[in-house]
Every structure is written in structure tokens, then in C-alpha cells.
Image (tube, rainbow, N blue to C red; front, side, top):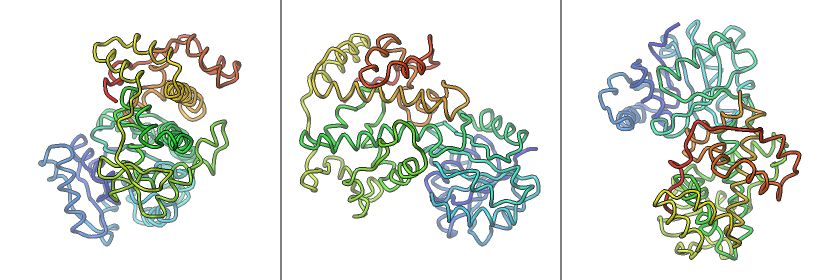
Length: 421
């Protein structure tokens, strides 16, 4: 089994472009890029070359349309679908892929949470063995996480071949996860983001969206604050992910995935975030005010503990910065501490349910979101101290069972804690 030529279905989308570039450059394979028009595929090839800063990889890519699907599939060793996150649309295309798939070829879907088992039913018995979910993160060149999801009928040899190929050839950080809503990284990340949306509504009189983003800013271990991240992802995409989780799971954090009404209103108005020009934010310097339902200038909130922590982080005094956070009694510090605890607890809990091992939550969040890894954060706080704080919010037995002795992360927390708001 060797991958020499692939077909990317839906190649003109952001993920399709990024994935095509990764295969064409790291894999040095021929990439057939299928879009709705030849023009879109040609533009996608140019974007792909720019995304890996190596225009010569464009020589490995060829533009096609859906009219060429049969031609492309019959010569491809691997097929990856990256179309819109809608089961009905994906079902249609996978039934076509099944019809024309080359014998022995591997087929896959890039989805942020649609059931891989349900999609596998689009295939005949033989092709079903070679089907799996492969969840790349956007942009793939910067975020190397790849969640690999077997369907119940996926052949072990084929699955392990693809796992090795992704890790050794495409240089991905591969995490194997069960076929559960949103898988691992998004399950954790969107819990945090949606909880931030809920807190923005709860504290709308304090400022709401930009107030919460200030409290959960870069100094907390993420490159982009959570509500800015939601705008970047797209509020419509965010809704699809959290609605899927809310409707199809029932863990202890179930209500955290309920989308606030003000976000629903923005989506109904076509305010999806960055891609539409406005969402939670507008024009980089304006934010949606939940109370007035209008945009206003972002505020520079004066929060003493944050400024003090950032000064400590600037000179590498991380432990001293932590002491400032945990000893502060302000509302803002209490909000931050609660999010810190919830992030670690949910990450450990859901990893034990979905992943191969608990340490996969660190890989998922570091390599898929560029957020501070949960176990690294736990180590930073200290196991005993973390348990003591967590018991304010959770049952003592639950926390003691969840956090086993001497959990050690492979990541250093320092690189994630920015000396910035």
C-alpha cells in the first residue's frame, strides 16, 4: 500500500486548500483538487502554494470540477472529503465516492464532529473497511493536530497504515479518538468558548464580551482569547458544533454547551464573525454590546491583577504570577480561576471517555488550538493545590478519582503563558 495520488473533494475551502498543500509538499504526491468550478480550483492551487510558502508544490496539484470526480477517483490511492459540515451533503458525496473508488483505495472525511459510523454506511462492504475520519485543524500548516477516527468496520491494517503515514510522512501530531460528537479537541475547546459566551451574558452589565475576553486573554495560555476565537471560527460553525454536542451527549457539563440567545440573534442576522465582517466583534476595534444590541468601541478594562501578572510573566516569574492570581479576591480573578479549573477538569474527564489515554488532551489542545495543555497547567498550579481549589466547585470524590498521582505533561507551560492581555 502506497499513496502516490490523492483527490481532495471540496478543495477550495480553507481546510481543503491547507490539506492539499500538506499532501503536495510533505507527501510529495499528485493532488487532484475538486471544486465547483475550474476557476475555484485554480485559485485554490495558488492559495495552497502560498500557505506552505513553496510555490513549487503547485506542480503537484491539478484543478478539476465535480464533473471529473469519476476520472479522479479511479486513479487515486486516497480520497479526502472536506465539504460543508452537513450530514446530508456529505452523505451524497460519499455515495458517489463509493461508486467510483479505486479498488483498495482509502477514503476519508474531514469533519469536526459528524458521526464517522453513519458516514461509513454510504460504502459497500469492501470499501467500508478502508473508510475513516481524519480531522485536520485549520490552518494545517500551523496546527499539526490530526484526530484519527475509525468507524466500526475500519480495517486495522489500513487504519494503522494511515496513522503512520500521517505521523511520519505528513508530520502530524496524531490522536486516535472514538466516534463521539466533536471528538476530543473541539469537545474541550468549544466547551471553554461556549462557557465564555454564557459568562459574557451573565456579566453583560460589567461589559460582556470584551470584558470576559480580557479576563481570559493571552496571559491565560492561549494565542487568541475565546470569544475572538469564536469570531475567527465563525459563529455559524460554532453553533453547529455546540448544538451537535448538546443534542447528542449528556455529561456533567451538558448545559455548558447551550448557545446563548444573543449569539443566536447574531447568527440569524448573518453576523457570523470574521468571514462576514461582523459578529461578536467588528472592525477590530468594536464589540457587540449585549445590553444595547449595538456595537461600541472596545474598552481598556483596568483590572489590577492582570497587569501585575503580565509584569511577572515578562521577567519569567511564572510562579509569582500564579500567586497573584490565586490570592486576588476580585470578581475577575474568581472568573478566571473558575475557567482554569473547569478547563483542566473537563479535559481530563473527556479524555478518559474519548481518547486512547489521558495525555492526549495535552496534544489536542497544544497542537490543535495552541492553548496551554491541561496537564501542563495542572502541573503549574500543583496537584494538591489544584484539588483544593477544585473542591469549591466539584465533588471531592470526583476530583480525587479524576486526578491520579504524578500526572506529568510532555509540554512546558511557560511557552503558552504570554506576557500580554
